[in-house]
Each structure stands twice: as C-alpha cells, then as structure tokens.
Length: 103
Image (tube, rainbow, N blue to C red; front, side, top):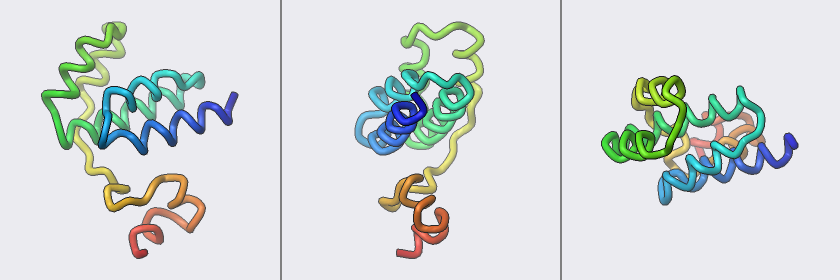
C-alpha cells in the first residue's frame, strides 16, 4: 500500500547514517517501482558520499540484476540535505528543507 511504502521510505532515510545496509533493504521493499528506484538512487548517492567502498561492496553482494547493479554503481555521491537532523517528512510539513534547516 502507499502508506506502507511511505513508512519504508521514511525509515530507510532515517537509518541510513547508522545502518546503511538495512536502509537499502527497507528501500528495496518499497512496492512502487518508480518510488523504489528513486529512493535507492538517493540512498546510494548519500551513502557513497560517506563510504564509497562500503556502498559498492554492498551493492555487488546484494544479488541485484546486472542492469540495476550497473545503474546504482554509476550513481555519483551526494550530500545529505537532511544531515543536520531534519527529515524529508519534517521538511515537507514545515515548508521545505530550507525552512527545516533554519531551526
């Protein structure tokens, strides 16, 4: 259901810093294919910013189809815009990430 997918998405983004492997597993459980793909790419980009070797090793061991694996291995690093304690859900409810960072 969309509600369960939303919960999985929020959980995966929240635990990325402390347990990136579990975060990726939760993201992989999102049923909506487009949402799952977007979330996985986002998590991989943020994980790669902190631990490029770790994310690549995890992806290679994850048993992903070759096309998906190659696409994720090609994702460049990205800074986590919520690294200061905010979350995407909080930012959305309070008027965007910019508003959330000012707090």
